[in-house]
Image (cartoon, rainbow, N blue to C red; front, side):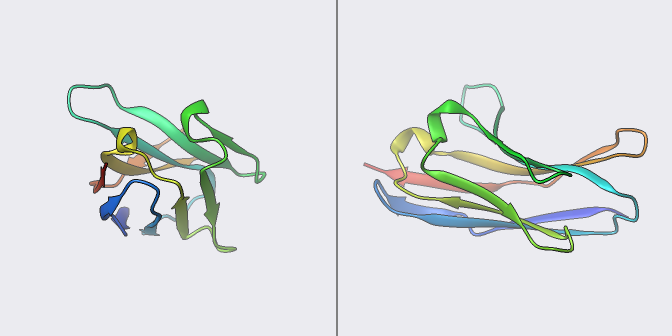
Length: 117
């Protein structure tokens, strides 16, 4: 059974930092991509950052220069370092893992990030 468990969310003041972690278990096939999405109340879920099998990273324009996605060498944990947080970053953040086999995708249950101004 594949499980993705996020942690590290919380309440911070604008300008502060948080580090989100996503621990993956039960994945027996090669991982193609790890990513973080977020969804704010009343808004659509958006891709925040991703890291590919080859190590390349992509970020939504609004977080470039502030957020950094990374993973451990075993591809079992993906992180999102969030610096200079803004009120607009307030959302539920979801971990996502895509596999090479069949293109399967798995989601975590999300962790709340709230930034006060």
